[in-house]
Image (cartoon, rainbow, N blue to C red):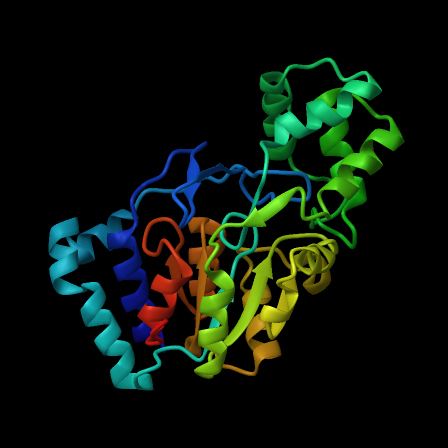
Length: 302
């Protein structure tokens, strides 16, 4: 298994482009979504940071061109098929915010629009800057930000971002992000693709840093029945990139980590975390841009 993990790491490092600290995640419909690292969305978009390819991996693989020659996608698919057959993975793990779903409106816009009747006067730019500062600070109350429903953490974020501690404002904002008005699917073809994957015997799970609102949110978007399991950090007591949450998803699906591939838009949380658990991993918006592409790389034609 160690050889497979090393090969996966080298390939992903070669194919993944460096992204800015405050950048955008790509969706299959051509849209962009601003992102805040590790904030999967209780209240909006999340920042994510990414790192350049490690020098040691660069030394092994060489230039991008050389890497594609040595460890091209086709070669890697052939390698997986030599081990597992035509279907290269028994399970697909999917990140939630930024991959499966995205906010329908910018976070700062919603904070301000809902907050105006509660006296919020900050501009959207000010709210966003304050949000970023608050989110980047260590959360001292527990080792996890999302404990149960995540209310204490999000109350801190909302009041820090807007200067408003009104409980009614918080509850309206908090409940808004549990509705289908706040979110939409990143890939409109997702349901069709997931049905084809499951028909081919591939198991599906959501793996997300989120509070306990994730399950009702998936129900609101009418996509909860697409998945065989949901691994939520608030329930697992581990947040990505901790390998524990990926291992829990594999346990729920009854597959070995090396039999699963995780797809997500954050290099640190999704790619490195999944690899450390022993899973394969593909970066959404860079290595794969749609779930149809994911399915075809697994070996399922849609």
